[in-house]
Amino acid sequence: MSEQRNESLPTGFERGTDGPKVIVVGVDGSDPSWRAAAYAAGLARRQNALLAVVYVQPFLAGGAALGAPVAELTEEVAEDLLAEIRATAERLRGTFAVRWEFHTFHGDPYSGLVRAADELTADAVVVGASEQAGHRIVGSVAVRLVKAGRWPVTVVP
Image (spheres, helix red, strand yellow):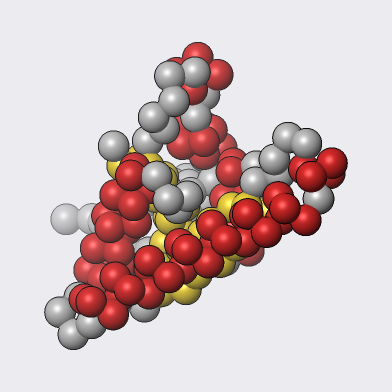
């Protein structure tokens, strides 16, 4: 019996590994983002991958006029998210070990996650489903990431 090969298979996602080595998950403090983080943590643990937890500090409307207060607010959110992640990791220490890093990026959520996935050489991206009704018309961050077609994207409800 002869072996058949298909040399024309696309290799866009292949990096020479079995499974993801870096999983990026976007968090913003919403319930869907925490569910996405929990799902991504389980995936990272099972795959022995690095979990890159990413918070994108938004540019708020009127941010230039508000100046320092807006920057302080987004920094506080990032610090609160990191504190919650550290507390959860400490609580689960020994029973649920996963390698993780926390990163902040600036900009709108879509562009920030794209930049994070590129810079961190993500093999997969996990995000929570949007709870905003308007995103069904305009398109959520998750839909835009899927349409970008650059990484496997998992959307957690």
